[in-house]
Image (cartoon, rainbow, N blue to C red):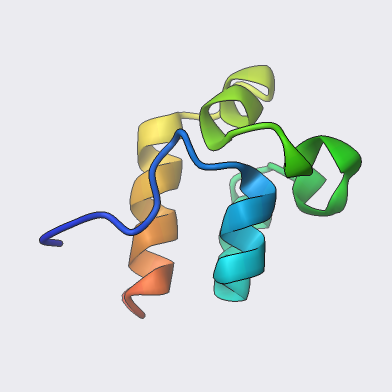
Length: 71
C-alpha cells in the first residue's frame, strides 16, 4: 500500500459516505455506530478507542477494503 486513503483522524461518517464498502469492515471490527449520530463528528481513533478496538489494524483493513484487497 503506497499511500493511505483513510486515516484515523477522518470521521467515521466521512469514511462511510465516501467509501460505503467500508461499512462491513467497521462492523467486522465491532464498531457498530457507523450510522449513529456520533459517527458524523467522531473520528476513527475516537470511535476505536471508545470501543477497545486496535485503531491501526482497523485503518489498515479500511484501506484494504477501499483498494479492493479485503478478504
